[in-house]
Amino acid sequence: MKTNFVPVILMLTSSLFSCKNDPQKVDAIWERPDGSVSSVGEGAKFFFHNSALIDSLAKRALDFGDTVAYERLYEIYYAAGLAREFYYYSFMMADQHNYGKASFQTSAIMGAKKRKGIHDTLSTYYLLKSYEQNYKRAKQGIEYEFGNSKIPSSAAYLKTLCSQNQRTDEE
Image 1 (cartoon, rainbow, N blue to C red):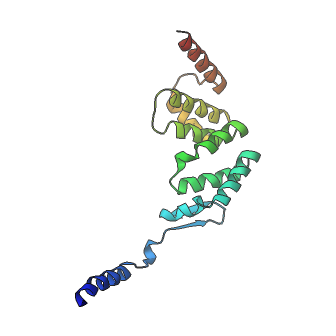
Image 2 (tube, one colour):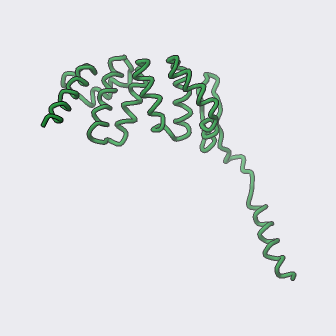
Image 3 (spheres, rainbow, N blue to C red):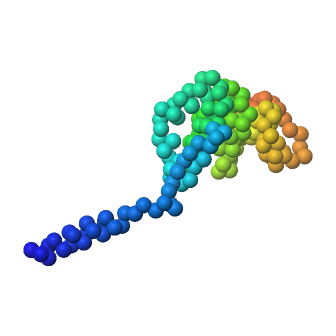
């Protein structure tokens, strides 16, 4: 009977000693004095899983065009490693509130994998839209995309795409 308890006791003691609190390996997320979110490791998911905070920020951003709420929402998604899942919010802020940074982020998310076809085309449209809204980072993307060529307006670019699509449908 003593031999049956030995493995059980060994398993219990090893499981107790294998759990340790390593203060140098603490995952954390905190709010900086300027209101931005900073994160280290998995702790970033704490704010991401705080649905009341996410819902509040999303409502303020989408319903009222609150760019501060949008920025905080972006930081939470980005810190949690979910920047691509942020697409809906960037798309809505770009279209409903004409926010230049959101147009740029929509372009970046859509063009992230260098897909061909509609994703690439719409990525360019949102890059042009961001450029027209004077978002500073868009200028570099425009220079890369168009080089020395004439830069079309986003409306003209979209109109060209629609007419090309109509011709393709007719054929």
